[in-house]
Image 1 (tube, rainbow, N blue to C red):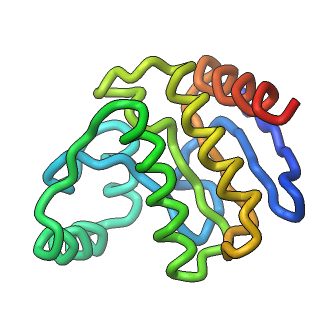
Image 2 (cartoon, one colour; image 1 turned 180 degrees about the horizontal axis):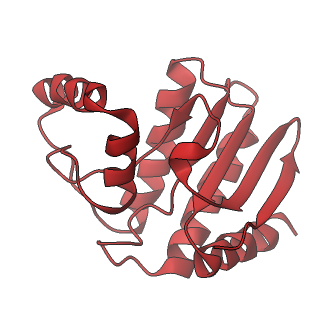
Length: 158
């Protein structure tokens, strides 16, 4: 896979779009799509579970006891997912967060539409003065997702 990277200032913060292995990019936290039962799966979810080990499942078991399950959905739900990632990161004082192209794998969400939703939500959140996040990186697997997210970012910020 070719290493591609785009770094865009958003005020004093930074939005990054890059290719690579999300588990190998230094960050305080990884936002992740999960199946409705919050159990390990395939794709990005499986990679995160393999890299993070059994502690991730123990934490998810605890979360599941409190909230039950988490349902996937449409564009507004996708926007809400990214928003929730930022809120959770902020509530823990996280400064750097990596995110995948949520729902574009197994769920089959259209890539460019997902990129537009994801980038617009993250840019809006990075423009907020009250959050702890300094850097959000979309870490994407392959040239097509990189192009879609880069296009969305350049459109959003032009």
